[in-house]
Image 1: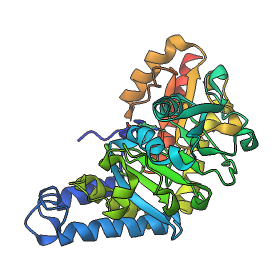
Image 2: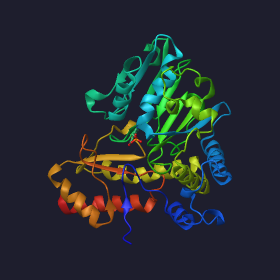
Image 3: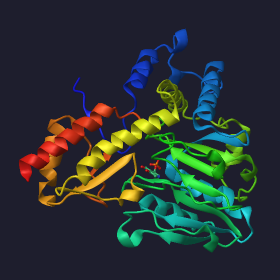
Image 4: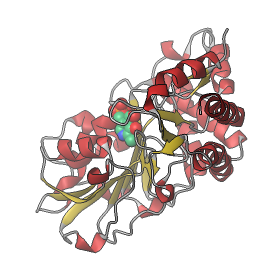
Length: 362
Ligand SMILES: Cc1ncc(COP(=O)(O)O)c(C=O)c1O
């Protein structure tokens, strides 16, 4: 097998130890003589898996008692609809405010317009989302049902370093590309959601962390399987859920606990990202996409000052075992997605390659 360092933005690499464990157990889960993907979502074995996943997440993310954990169909973008369906009616004005920090934030706001009056309270569109815009929560009407942010912007490589204090208005965050990569005070949020495919497991499912008191506002027309209350009441098993994805998430969380938990992975992530930002900052050959103060530790984005060299950069990178570095088509350039599972040596190898490429092409 050819081993590469996989910088894919998502679906993204999972820890090798997790993949090996899944492979080991695949044909025969826990001595049952059957695979995890062949057994009932109502079996006692799966029940133990989903309970363990909950407990690990509570411990790792330090989730307070008054929050529910849901495993919701349809990945992150389905939550772009589920959030307004479940929350827009919290206030009869049916208003919500969105902060536009990239394409996913924009899509989330657009989807929400089907259900209420959506305002863009701040936007960095004018500078092509190279930063998090200034946002003063006091400009938002008090009768707004919720305020939505995208905490880490996967395409542009920006993140909120601090989260806005929104008082009585619940703060909702799409944390798809950073949940469990940094310590977060969950109590600051009404809802956090994340597609699993970056730091949590395979694609197709979203993990939703919701404050209990927000479970009672769904619009009457909300489909049962988009109603967060259905998930909360039936432990995400109102129908046949993606048992394999939940099982994989459990393995990822066990791995994260073995790494020392979120605070420990956060400091590893900071230093991994610093290896790449250091090359960018000390070069006139590379140009970072994101403003320094708003940089992500999950997605490092940059351009080559001479864009004509981009194809050569990507081809040679691949020859060095550095896979999936092409930037998103809306942004161009290079994007290195370095989620929790990316080993430090992957970032070191990329940083060395960047320096060598610069020296050979300057
Ligand atoms: C921040 C963010 N939100 C939403 C999505 C969409 O996720 P999904 O494809 O699971 O709908 C992504 C996917 O990369 C993302 O990075």
